[in-house]
Length: 185
Image (cartoon, rainbow, N blue to C red; front, side, top):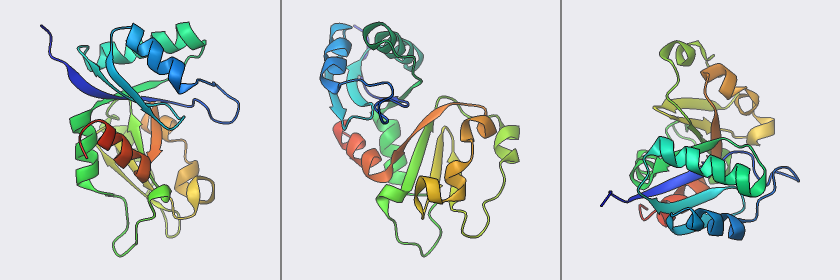
């Protein structure tokens, strides 16, 4: 019998405005029908926690196919284990400048589909004073956005182009809640 893993699946860019609308109930049903167990969602932004015997790449491909076939959308899918998400939470908000009070909705973790090439990561500019802050930890990009995504310069940087890999961001509150759902508070 294959090992079952508690996995976190993050869909990029769904239910933003009127684009790529997917109701979470039908998404849970479709993933359950594909053989995944204990499927739960958080909010309407594509945060899914489920049990699976698939490895990360196979699970990402399966969920991508499910969303395309069932809902007609082509979206990036990022997968982490519950343990990996717990490590992000345990590591804390690493991009938060010393002495700064955390505002969870202004701290974003972008979960990348792959570890960026060292040359790409090294080429990312240093944030200037008042620009916000960023830190790359493996496949996770941490962003401190004191004036929000739109109002903070690093929030507008084209991170997928800078790092050469796609990703999807969640604020610190959502990261913590999804980690709880994955059984790894």
